[in-house]
Image (cartoon, rainbow, N blue to C red; front, side, top):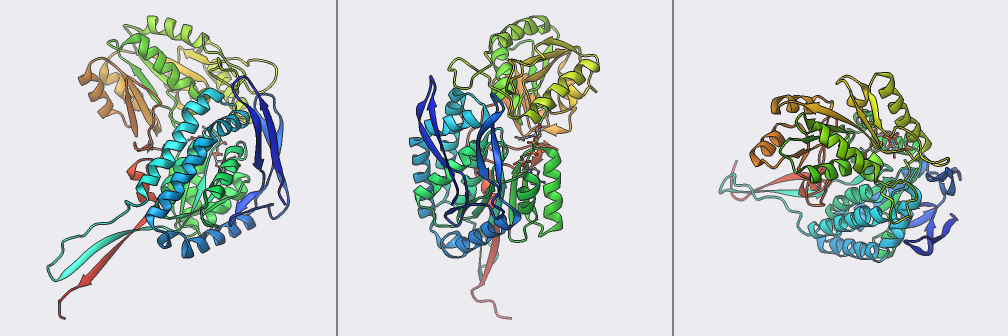
Length: 500
Ligand code: NDP
């Protein structure tokens, strides 16, 4: 019988006792992993143990796939009416709303993001996402296609079957919601692997999914390491589609596994090196605040983080001075402090990686204009960091750092900035700041990115698609677009009176 994690929060922003099951959730039951082993969950504010979760194995993935297939063939898929799927999803959203503070507190404890922002962004967006897709569940339909008066031809958008979903640690609940929302709405059955760095909200969600009354096997959660459980999902012959958010490196491995196994459909939401472009006619005060939010939100651990800030030469000096002052004012520390904007990075591994990039920037001759150092004696806190005097081929300009580190670069004219902004293997997002609508829009249209924000940054909605150009990924999540990832189109041709 798997253990339960019981934790008493006594913080300025949240007080209360929370209990989280620590097992795997397979076929509507909480179970231990096949090998009976566990994985340590670490608190990023101090590097100490929070709890231990059950560790899944390929054998557990196999059990989960079988349970999901049974549900798909009997109680879910084409056997559950859209209206019933919608009702269950809305019930889940109600339960998430009722437990929003608990979910925020768990996210803050486990991931290190601030309780305030977890509540405002992660949890509220996740609830909205489940409600949005609940609305779609009874609106999945094909087309009637005119072929001949002697025939009736139509398409059906059928659920694709059992799907694997691999979720990262930067937005644990939000990425889970983006994935389970369209899958449940279309009638797919799910095997989900959270990141082992941040499993607590996914475990709590499994409890809420159970409470909402979804049939056994519709949703299965297998915690475990990426190269074991993630790999088993990517390789599995019974999984028809895999959705992954994470590094480009692992994205490639998943495509390879899909190609070598059953050619399962793949959607990938990968890295980025997004530009924020500040023209000389921008509202400077607002541009500074949004550009800072663009890079520092979630401690820079955003795939769409605006880590390359390009500033027109006419306003460069003033921008840099005021942007630096704004950066200095961001409070870094305890995620449960209501005044903190930034908590720790997720792990020692990510801390080392980011500090490695800061060292490489220095070694390649860039200037650390602000920050560049550790904060405190324990945990994984890094000061927001601004680099200047960079060159286009430096690693800190080209590679995704995934931390609170930006480069501020001067540009001269509109053509030059489009070329510089597009000089990246990535193409996830971009932000443009200008009061001139023609200039802003013509720049937006020339940028090779899946999302372009104008006079704003990092803003996402459940009904607006998100995904990347180039090596930032394949396919789109969110919005109506995401539904097609989870359906197979069947064309049916009926002969009314053609004789052969
Ligand atoms: P990974 O891509 O390794 O991890 C993301 C998820 O994939 C985790 O659940 C991981 O599990 C899993 N995974 C790892 N290996 C495999 C595999 N062979 N098959 C299937 N799943 C696998 O990212 P990291 O955590 O190592 O972070 C490294 C970098 O990736 C970051 O610095 C950042 O640049 C990028 N990243 C991008 C994200 C995004 O939102 N686009 C999110 C997270 C990271 P496990 O944790 O057990 O390895």
